[in-house]
Image (cartoon, rainbow, N blue to C red; front, side):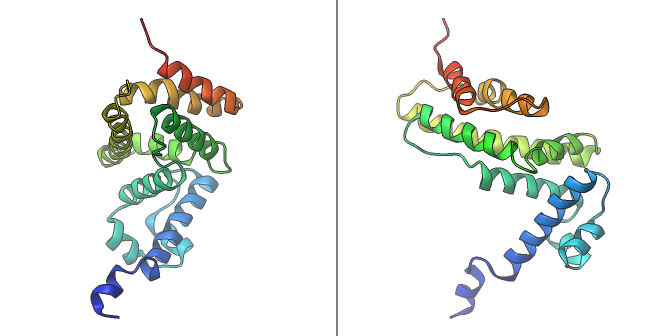
Length: 191
């Protein structure tokens, strides 16, 4: 195998270190909440050197942003089912499963914590929001290209995502019927 093939190989040490660091962040947030740990504690928990974390992410806010985006993209990716209703139902169901899991509100906790951690944290929070909005717009643009009448990305956030998160924050159940009903109301034509 030549050097170019080796450097493009998925997985390997870099992927393992990234996964260990992400898991350490997740565990520390669940145990202590955001703001109650340092990069050094993340590195120690992950079994890597502090310098490895700083070299790869630069600071805690960048690391937290990466953890949040990676979680969002792997646990509730943007689907492409061939129809807007199908995409929204699949996406909403994935988000509902994610946020009702054992550490489901992790991304919400990260966004809230970053919002109160100064200018760097606000930029990180905005980066998470902007990336997710970009992904939503891509899904909605695909629907428009198919000739479907698609809502605005902010409407999806307001009328689909926000109710899911609010119900979980208040300890209310997310049934499949409730989740599908949100999609139905979002797609219902408004006079």
